[in-house]
Every structure is written in structure tokens, then in C-alpha cells.
Length: 127
Length: 127
DNA sequence: CAGTATCCGTTCCGATACTG
DNA sequence: CAGTATCGGAACGGATACTG
Image 1 (cartoon, each protein chain N blue to C red):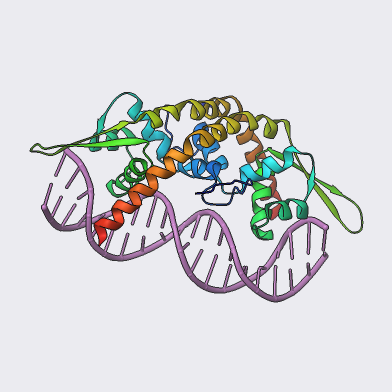
Image 2: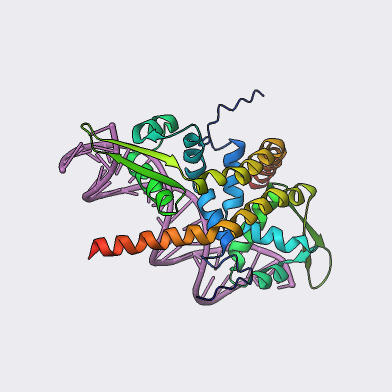
């Protein structure tokens, strides 16, 4: 299996693209963050997020499991118990994401200001 | 203007969310990368990417300008010339994105392997 | 050259209701 | 408890054609 990257960032298998898609997903970072504190159950995650439907949570968790970023463990009990936890791979993702988060915290005020100013100008234009 | 973040990552104005949305955008990182080499004209960018329609490129560039990540300069010439270049803010985004890219290059093989393996298992299941 | 204008298919996500 | 099933709306991005 030959693999060569010419920097085709719109090749769906370009590493950067794959990671950007995962990390840019609406819930991924939030879930990974929550699991930082330790294993959590389905409803614990759901309540911790507080605005995600079970359907969406399920599909996000499935993707995360598929990518090997989190693990799903089922306990044969009644009532059923399922725990999700970070894998080493998932944990290792924290560092770069934190770098991005820190950039965000430092610079987003400026970015939002710019964006708002632009929106006002657009409004003025439209009138 | 009071601002307090309780970590509402699904608050559309949460810094992390804003940055993730911008960076997770399909073309943003690619465009910022291209502009690293210096100012570029509309069609230069378009050809460098080679798979983006003018409409989408326009809207992406507009967003980037609105956010203050790139600058748009119009030259009063015939034929018209417009140049796009990174702002300091745009340049400063490179570092955290590079961190993510490096994580991608180191770990995506594993992630893709996991994903493929999972897909095969799903196929087997479906049959 | 540097865009605009339209149309259209897909994908994502949320709401709601139901189940092993 | 931990999901699944269905439906629907909105947003995104692409194809194509046209313009100041």
C-alpha cells in the first residue's frame, strides 16, 4: 500500500484533513474533554454536555470509538452499564487541541470584534 | 460588556468553538497555508487549490477577511487586481495549526487503520 | 480578472417518540 | 440505562453560467 501526500488537503485521507474534520466536529472536543476526568457513562456525558440528543451523542461516540480515540466498555449488569474512556491516542490529542484552545483564548476577542465590526458595516451597506 | 465562559463549548461564541469552526472549515487552513508564501491574487489561490469554485472561494475569503485573518487589497488598475495576504493574526494561527498537523502526521495512520478495521467489522455484521 | 447569480444534492443536526 | 427509529429543517458546498 503506497501512500504519498502531495499536501492534497482536500484529499479526504490527507492526515491534516482527517484530523481537522474530527476536531472540527461540533461535539468531539467537548466529549474528549469530559472524558479527561475519567471514564463516564452515556448519560453522564449527555448531562455534562446538556444540549445533545441521544441520537447525536451515539453517533459521535461511535465515530470516536471507530477512530480509536475512545473506548467503549459494556458491563453485563442489570440495569445495563456502559462506560466510555479515553484511549492513549485520545489522550495524546489533548496537547495540540489545548494549543489551539490557548490561541483561541488569547485572540478570539480580537477576531470577534473584527467579525462584529464587519457585520455592522454590512448592515449599513444593506440599508 | 460582561463576558464569562463556563466552558459552554456549544455556545456559538465560546472561543474554542469559534476557532474550531473556522479551522475545521474545509478550505481555511489551505488558504492560510498558501498565503504563508506571500500575497496572492484571487485566481492564484484558486489554481493553487485546484478544486474550489469561485463562489466558495469568495465566501471563504470573505469570512477570513471578516475575522481579520487575511487582508484584501484592491488595486485601481485595468484589468483589476486584488491581492490577499495574511494579517499578523492570521500568521499567528499557524503555530497551533502546525501542532495539530504534526499530531496528524504522527498518528493518523493509526486512526485510519482503526477506522478501516471498524468499517470491515460493520460490513461483516451487515452481511 | 475577479468575481456574481442560481440551482441543487448531500450532509448534519435537532426534535420527538419508542425499546431491549 | 442506553440506546434506536423516523422525520424534518437548515446549512454547506458543488456545478454551471453569467458580468462589471
